[in-house]
Length: 323
Ligand SMILES: [Fe+2]
Image (cartoon, rainbow, N blue to C red):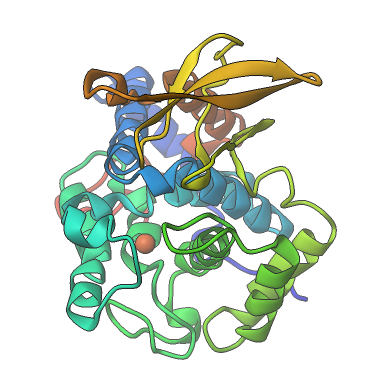
């Protein structure tokens, strides 16, 4: 395995940027607000698709660990973790009949699904800080052999962030429940990543990902929706129930896929979801963005010095001090 070089790993003008950020209206505080609203934007996808419960958090976590293991600088690690959180934003533009279909998609439906990277890019086009996540959003379904979409890019022409997020996204899809299948065991999914190394996935990054998985690094992320919070089991839909960190025994929880109601019960030091036999009302299915989780991500990205990367963009979305 070799260390993977980023084309934007070092940024020598961060002092200039630091000065400029103090001159912009809102300065750093305005930038943090922009980042928080970007993270909130990602939650729109979680609200649309009950089967993505925790997907964005998991992909972000896998991507962060993979980027670190591949030897990238802390600000680049943070940028890639952020890209992992935002990568599927364009799915808000995919109709329910396709996004929530209880079965494999037909060709015409795949054509609709394959538009989501471009939808994501367009939705983000005038958004502050969008340049940080453009690679992950627009290119996470490219494949190293050129068989991916939307552009059929090959090898290292695919941006590094997208090569990383692409592996993490595929692994999470395999190890998560779908309407038509149970989650795949981690070891089997790692075998598939390994088998697709050099064709679907970047060879070096796939080797890093599989090595981390075989060292047990993914077992606290797969099947979880937050640090130390496993998905709970719905008897109809599988492990898809997201429990907020602050939820306590006695609290009601609802499966957003089949709308079954559950009550949380403490059992052997863990919280379990017991079906109540009732179905959720429309108002009980209203979803909130997990603000506590988003603020924790914000703090972690700051600790990784995400703000050392260029913040402001030029007229065409190019980082103002990058060239
Ligand atoms: Fe995607």
